[in-house]
Structures are given as structure tokens and as C-alpha cells.
Length: 266
Image (cartoon, rainbow, N blue to C red; front, side):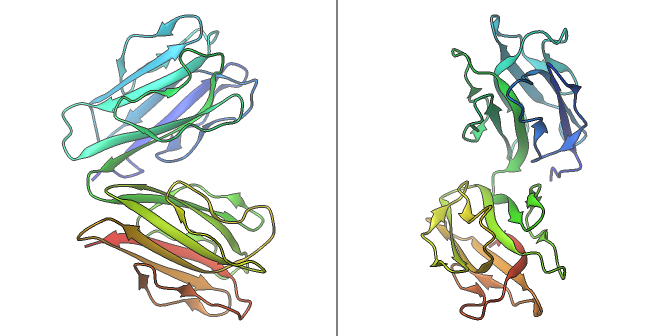
């Protein structure tokens, strides 16, 4: 199984130069509209067959390269406006990636050599995220935490949030790859139960200072798999595992969720 320790990547900004290496699922780039990405590298120990291609402003699509090589303008003059990535001869895995353009918008997640970006337009890439996932249902998730903001992505069954410090979890974002959809619903301070949202949409609130008190998560149109989740409540610690749309947390008692773990299993 490919893990976050197997893959790392970095990008070169036209203003800032090369960034630090980041792990799979994290953001590479500065999110500065003036600092377009001119080239990037993906290094891996778990896979050897990545094919990577990018489009440069004024030049179009460059020749494909493989992992460990540099994709883009090594002279750091032309900005990238689109990328596409695929795996060759690695059954059971797919690549997912998305880019942030210099107008501040993130593309949808693309996979397996679909185009992410704006190869025919005037926008350029300022950041990107990348991951490799298995055919079976798989998820990555991150949260908006009091005094922290958005965390990095964590994988199946990992702890998201800060236990025992009284810092509320305010929002949850889950990237799900697999059949069907993943549906979430949050119970938020002063708002009650919000409308259901699907994966790759923010569940909860951000920058409003409101605690998430309970949550429901379920899979839609997925046979043979279940989603399990448990929450850590301030003053109460970790609660029992819930599954498939059951309430995890408290309601009406004013207690905050500090952390959460989520996993998918048969």
C-alpha cells in the first residue's frame, strides 16, 4: 500500500524559488497570485511509474517526464497553467491531483491524466496537491481547528484535531475516492443541524468561532463497505465508534468536538 511516507513533492515559484518538500495530500505552493509555479518535482519510493506533463504559458504542453525529474521551465521564467499525471502498470492504484490558480480558485480533483488547470486561458498555477489512492474506498480528511485554521490532510483512522487542549473543531473536509458518495452533516453551535453535504465540500463553519458538537457520516450507493467514526469531546474524551449516519457527539449540552477519527471498512 502506498503511504504518505512514500511520496513527496515540491514546486518552484517564479518569485520565491523552490519550496520545501511536502508529503502526499499536502499543499505545495505559496497561494500568492504573483508567485506562479514554473516547475515541480514528484519523488517516490513506493511507485516508479509516474508520467507527468505540464503546460507552460506561451509554449503549450511540454514533453512528458517521469517521477524524480523536473516538470516545467527550469529557467524559472514561464509559469505553468495546467498539469496532468498518470500511473503506468500499477494495478489497483490511481493518482488524484488538483491545482490552485492565480485567481484563488481550486480546480476539482482530477485523476489519471485528466487536465487540471487552464491550458488555453490566461490563468496560471500557484499551488497544487497530489495523492495516490487504491481502487477500494479511501479517504483523506482535514479540519478547521480553533487557533490553527485548516490542518494538513490525514488518512484513514488517523486523529484529526487536538485532544485535551480545549480547541474546537469547527469544520471538516473529506476527500473520498471510491464508488458512490460520502455524505456528512454537522450539528453546530447556535445553528443546529446543518444541511447535508457530500465529500469534497466543507461540512461545518469556518472563521465564525462556532464549535461543532456532533456529526453524522454515511456512504451513499456503496455496497459491502461502511464508514466508522468517533469523536473526542472536551472533558469527556474519546466516545464510542459510530457508523453509517449515526450521531457522534453531543446535542444540546454545549460541548465541543476536539478531534475525530474516520475509517472505511467492510
